[in-house]
Amino acid sequence: MTSPGSTPLPANGPTGPQVSPVVGPGPAATPVAGRPQAWPVAPAPPRPPSLIQRRWPGPSGPARPLVLGALTAAAVIGASILTTVRPGLGWLVAALAVTAALGTAGVVRSGRPSPTASAIPPTGAAAPTAPPGPTAAPERTVQADPTAAPEPTVQAVTARPGATGAPGRAEQALWAAATVALVAVGTVRAAGWLFALCLLAAAVTGTLAVTGGRSPLGMLVAVTLPPAATVRALPWAVRGVRDTRPAGSGVGFGRILTSLTISAVLLTLFGLLFSSADAVFAELVTGLLPDISVPGVIGWTFRLVVIGGGLLGGAYLVTRPPDLEGLRPRPSRPVHRLEWTLPLVLLDALFAAFVLVQLTVLFGGAGHVLRTAGLTYAQYARGGFWQLLAVTALTLLVIAVAARRAPKATRADRLLVRVLLGTLTALSLVIVASALYRMQVYADAYGATRLRLVVATMELWLGLLFLLVGVAVVRLRAEWLPRLVIGTAVLALLGLALVNPDRLIADRNVDRYLETGRLDVDYVSGLSADAVPALARLPDPMRICALTQIAAEQPRDGLWATNLGRLRARAELDTIPLSGTLTYCLELGRW
Image 1 (tube, rainbow, N blue to C red):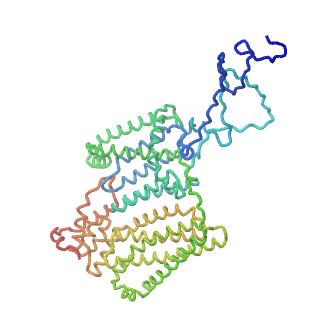
Image 2 (spheres, one colour):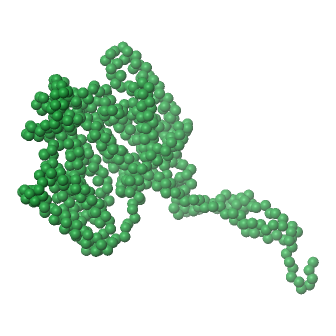
């Protein structure tokens, strides 16, 4: 009770009137007597996707059984036919099997949506609301207007479905074809050093074939992805093996693996029976089957793990390629015109002075230059080639930095960039020609070698790059240049393989011997079997000493070690009687 004129106070406790706080959606809290009710904790907003989830989310479902079967078959084929001592036909067949397996992975993609991809809302979509609690008011049912336009359906986000990192599949197919062509060099040429260079280039082109990447930064990132892809592909493959539901063709991985196993057992059983019945067929089967000794099984297992891991990572990348299109460096702040104009003007003047001296050497002024320098012509050539090679490479770096930092806002700025960088590019082409001329003189004086031929090929490639840089300077656009840099390097390497470098070196040295009577027998006898047809032109005792060591290193190859260069060399050596003694050849030494 209250006295008249007093202000009534609200009663506390269960007997007084209760004021219900306004709460958000969610389960209602149980009221506790005598305690103030706390506000419910709002649900935390979903975390934004990370950089890897945005750029490289991976396949949206488990690996398809057909893909796993193709990868298994390619790995077994590669482990069984690759030759590690001498390159041959097995490398080409393995490359074709790998290409077919990865092509299958690119065509047969994972089609089941992943929970992760479905949980990421698209840009601009409303965040999902929490389900109403047991005390929430029931929602009103709103009748849809049949005349209204249907609302858009929110679908699962799939980052770059079917993307390849290039417009369409054309560029991906070109990199794959380049990879197979580089590996095929081991079937045609016997030079091991050339095949090693081709394998390194094939690793780069193969990576670009499965990852894409067109900008310089995108290409650098693409090179680092295959090892990470192999690790990330393991759970993807495990999910595909455990997934018993047939997809696509209706055949599970277990049935495919069983079919492959039964086929291998039947072929092995009947092959052994037929080989025991016929000696010719037994020799053929022996060349087809891998070595079953303990070291052979260990080597086969190691190759299977390495090739299988690489294939699994490649299939993971092909199934869902990363988004490397946006990986570009931020535009740099243009510098003041004076900051780059003065250094380039001075550099152009220095290049022009050097080019004038080189022109006197190239067009009849060599005697004056050599008398002034006090050197022989061969010493002059040898002393300057490597410096000119370094100048050529540094000039490309200077042009790249200047083209990036120079202002291009006005027409005068663009004209100045074209004039100064175009002049530097043209003068650099003359320096490249001078370096090639020096190498020609050097080879005439001391003979041709592998190193001199490779460096001359590099100079020709750098000259081609300067032509491409000149086009980019004129257009002031160079988005296409990074891909052409790698593409022209691959073409230069394939061109070197096409001219048969070891035979070319032997031909040059044999011609030099026939003219001057001087020949480094120790060097030419260390060339590969590709040089045998050229060394066979030598007169007899030189021919015997040059070919004896090469003939001793030409055993009969099996089927998968078949090499066209070694086949030609053995056919040539069978017609030459090698009767010289080792003592006589050692006394002959270097002529």
